[in-house]
Structure formats: C-alpha cells, structure tokens
Length: 420
Image (cartoon, rainbow, N blue to C red; front, side):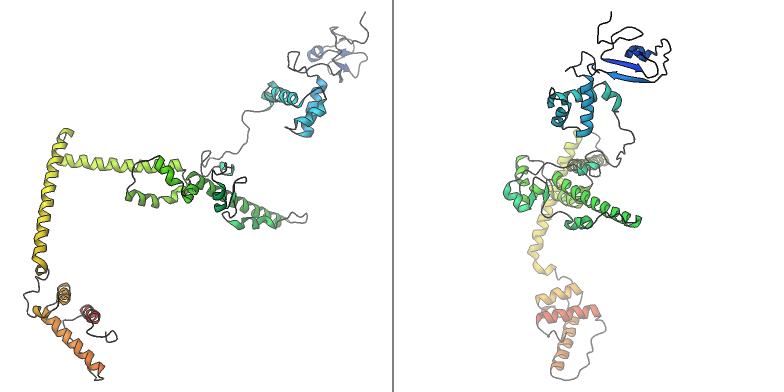
C-alpha cells in the first residue's frame, strides 16, 4: 500500500512528490519527468494533452552533486531577484531569496551556474554577432575607440597640480582644449512638440559635442604618450640624464622638428622607431656611397680599403698644408693683391681705401670715379647756394653705378641725404 502523502507516476510507479506533470484533460493522471519527456500514454491519456507542472519546491535543478543544495523554489526566487535588483546587488538579492542564503553564496551560485556553467555557455555566445568593428586603427592607436578610455592620473606633486590647474580625480584641467565646447548642449532640451528638423538639429549639436570631447581626449593621450607634461615641468631632463642615448646631431634635431606633425598620427614608440630607422638608412646610404667610391678606385676587398684610406688621408693633409701656406703668402701680400685690377691706372693714388674698394667692386677706373665725384659734389654745392644747375653726368654712368656712388658719398659725408 502506497505511503500516505506520497505521489507516484501512473506509468512507471516512481515517486513524483518533488516534481510531477498533471494532465489537465484526464483525471488522476500524473507522470514523472522521464515518462513525460518520453511521451508516455496510458488509458485515455495522450501525449498532446495539456499539462500542469506540480512543483513541491524541494527538487534541485542541477542535481544532487551541485554545491549548496539549492532548491527549485530558491532558484526561482534568485531569477526573480536578478531581474528586479540587477546584477551586482547581491545583498538585496540574498534578502529576496531568503535568510538561509548569504550575499556571497548568492553571487557564487549565480556566477558558477548561470554564467560559467552549461546554461551560460549555451546562452552567452563567445562572439557577439553584428558588432561594429573599427578597422581604422588597432586598439590603442590614435584613431581607435580606445580614445575614450580614461587614463590613470598624472604622477605629479600638489604644487605642480596647482601650477597646471590639474584635477587628478577627474583627470581634467581647469582650462581644457576648446573650453566653450559645452555651450553646444548646455541649452538643449527635449520637447514633445519638436518636429523632425528640430530633433535632427539637436542631434547634430550632440554629435558636434561628442567630436569635441574625442578631440580633447586625443590631445590628452598625445601629451601623455610623448611626456609633454614632464617636459613642461622640466622633469624630462632628469630622465634623459639617467638613461643616456646616442648623441643627436644638429641635422637630426632639425629633422625631428620638421616631423613634429606626425606626432598626432603615431605613438611615441612608433615615432622613435621611425626616426631610428631613418638614422640607420642614412648610415647605410653613406656606407654604400663609400663602397661605390672604393669600387671606382679599383678596390674590391675590404683589406685594401685601409691602405687606400691611409694614402687618401696623407694626400688631404698635404693639400691642407699647401692651402695654409698659400693663405699665409696672401696675407703677406696685403691689400695690393685686392686692387691689382686698378692699382696701375691713373688717379689710383688719389683715392682713399674705401674709394679703392668701391672702384674695385664697381669695376670703375679711378679717373672716371674722380670725374663723377667732382660733378656730383659741384651740383650739390650749387643747389645749396640756390644756383640753378643742370647735371651733366657722363654717358658711361648708368643708374646702378650712379645710385651706388650717391649712397657712398652720402655715407661718407660729402653730400647730404636730401641731395642724394
């Protein structure tokens, strides 16, 4: 005789007190989960009849081997709590499930069974479909969406923070790039009577503001990547002294200044690698030119190059000594060699040193210069005395020569500037 209070499957006679399926069309037909899933039929009962789940609340969804022994009723309360309070509010969820469960137990059970368990693996895909992928740049690059990722605060002192107007908790400055960007959205409001044009206009304002925020963050990332803040505070000099590198020549410094616009498109490491590769390229090109020079001079082995370089060094040394000796002889000759073209012409002894230089530079004979000088000074004196005079300069004096001579006489004090 069946024990009082217990329920048994009408097909296989197994105990179904914790969970059973009751037919809503046939009287006294209750099946166990195995027989129900197999589609068992007995008497007037058919597999397509409607059914009702009768739950005693004591069976476990994950089997007896699951940790904690969570009953089906607790599982249902847990799912109701996660929907009501949201993921992460474990204390409120534990209160909703019951006093027998702590927040730690609720968190561990949900994560292990519903996320990392078989149910989570079956429901949560490894790759989310239809996700937009940014192909413009790899993650972390200057054009990637990681521009909006907050950076850690700058490692600077309080005095330096005040000097920069830097707020470390917000990673902001008192004066940001495009300080008035917030005015685009400060006056926006959503009204129910807005038409489509007004809504699109407000969306355009929001889009403009987001673009300005991205540009502001991009500039912060560049300053952080290239250590511009320590450079402004003078800390980069100490770091350079600690980690000495190869000495950068003047040409390389000028080239680095010309390549500064590339900073916004390349990270600091990429730019340094690019600059170092350019240095290696120059070294290789110089080496190639040197090897080509060896080949033109008939040298085909590196062992012969040392002898060739020694001979070339001796030739250059002899040539340098010869140039030094010739320069000394030139200094001994004095200024006579400078005026060799006009020193034998008549009137040379009448000229001053400055006039000799002028005649030599203009390729003008001393006699002609004295003639032009006399005419210009005579005309100047007549004009000062109020005597009308008509200047009759020689035909060989063009405008360029006249201007040069007038400027020279004015600077020397022979005539006034008004007359020139």
